[in-house]
Image (cartoon, rainbow, N blue to C red):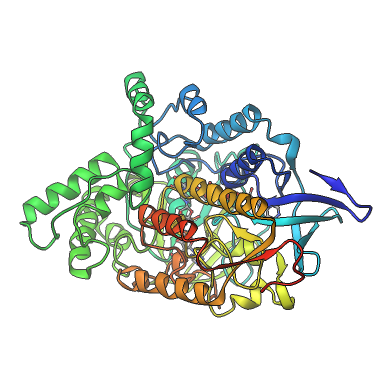
Length: 545
Ligand code: FAD
Ligand code: N01
């Protein structure tokens, strides 16, 4: 029940964020009979798909899988139009879900959470909002997103440009018309790679500033046929189950051979299949060892580099676009539509910042160590303070006054990527050390939401007021996450997975690479084993045991 005790409102659960995580959390808690409120900074639902409205934004997990599975009717009534649907369609889907389940009446928009403090005596969270209100809640869920805290580059003069600047992660709702403009784009991750081809079609000239070339492959995006959609709808239960049991949250045939035990022809034929299908996972799982063995990985990397060389006409530009500094897959690989071809256009130039570093942004443009560029607009495709940014941006104070920011200053520490020792009744959907960004996020979101539902129901049924991860369980999970990561090539890259894109951020592989199927099984076993690794407090006991 939502109540007011004269000192502010009180609800069972406060959820931060109205993306796919927060929306399903709200719906699920309502079904279980809890009173929940969602607080959302933006003025609409959709999270990622509300903010990232840059040209070309679309998913790179096939839409038929990048969608909720929790409601069969929803699944049957909604039809995706494209293999990888564009941002407007995904946002329309989010709005449809919000309407269909009447979610908006419990979402407060344009409301940011700034601070949250655990009141141990009362066993409640006091959650402070940008509107000056304090809401009390027994449980506090951060559904604040892994890729929601955008960041500008650390470049001298970054705020000094006179003309308009845009960050891909909070693009103007009304769109941007680049017609006739000289545009500088900084960043060549997924957002840059998706947007550059479309900006180039419109602008008079585009200069792309690339620090690290990325591995990208053509999405092969296309309209879905009616037959494809209905055949998926007929088989959805089996497909969803396969996704839940898989490694990355999409069903895929598992490899049986090493890349090094087959002939070059056989190897390249397998890579060609992934490339022509526009299927990232198929390429990374073409062989057993692509993401674990450097020599095996080199074969996939060289396959992609040869594709780049075959597409890009100018040999120096082609070579500059070829990634050599990280194994393929260890930075988030990209799916594109005409990215490499864009560098054959007369109005596009690539600047390799490894040769001529960016030195300054000025009122009229950008300077490198060798040149000055004048622009009418600058696009920052410079990414996010991923996985932890949105969490530590809120001043979250747990038991004994410890803050989450302090606790994580040498690296994230969580149990299952879901709860944190010292922070009772606090949950992070797709938090660090869960499969999260190493998966189809819809699968990971649904699993965390349902796990939180199981925990809250258990507490209620057993008259417990609070739950907390033990230090031992957290230590074990941190170690387990690190061991899983160390068995792969991921630590070799300077990626946002490793926190390397934020100066001073501890270098730790944040997501859990064990796979969504294995992780789900681990979680299920913990629940079945009487919530192993958690302590619970009786409603009448004053402090955590
Ligand atoms: P988000 O969608 O990020 O929502 C979090 C919400 O919390 C935001 O609306 C934010 O405003 C709000 N918020 C944060 N902090 C506060 C605060 N303090 N107070 C109030 N509100 C707050 N994943 C895939 O699996 N497949 C894909 O193809 C894919 N494509 C992507 C494309 C782009 C461009 C990006 C950026 C990410 C993509 N992702 C993809 C990852 C994507 O983030 C997730 O799939 C999913 O949308 C995350 O949902 P979420 O609800 O967890 O977080
Ligand atoms: O961000 P990024 P993103 N000087 O961090 C460069 C998801 N997503 O928004 O690599 C010069 O990947 C930086 O260079 P470097 C997906 O999970 C999915 O593109 O650090 N350059 C890099 O090139 C993705 O991984 C889709 O050397 C600077 C770029 O900016 C995640 O979101 C689409 C710089 C940032 O790339 C983030 O993607 C979009 C500087 N000072 C996003 N600072 C799909 O297709 C940064 N850079 C589904």
